[in-house]
Length: 160
Image (cartoon, rainbow, N blue to C red; front, top):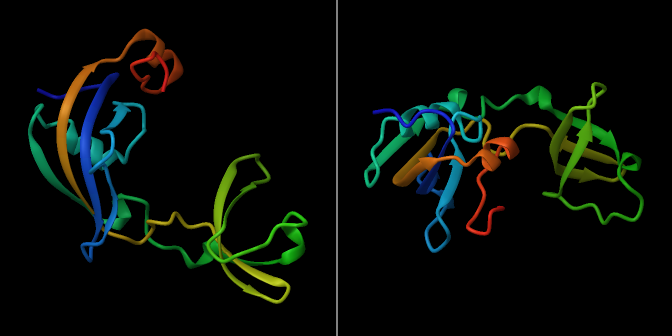
């Protein structure tokens, strides 16, 4: 039976790239929870988890195009260093958010700094990577009215 929408799904997971490098894991941490059917995890991952039963484990592989998309060279740009806030000690790897003309937030990472020119990358950090998830489904419960209204899972103290 499918998990369906508006359920609080609790799971342990390990996420690896195609070379087997661990990207994220819940090992030695609290399990991960999400509100099903609310676009809180990758759609193809949720589709696979939806078929699991509590206590089961599953290995799920998702191609880059079905995860965070292929890497887009056009999403890499060079900008003038003066576009960054004054007083910021700009470093490679720093993350910022820009606003599109429509007001949409667009996160980016500083990739390179050459004198007064900064190379920035708007690609998701996992773009172009095939992903592999080891999932252990721990629990599924109905979401509370408050969780549904807020659009996220609440912890034991009624908020998360």
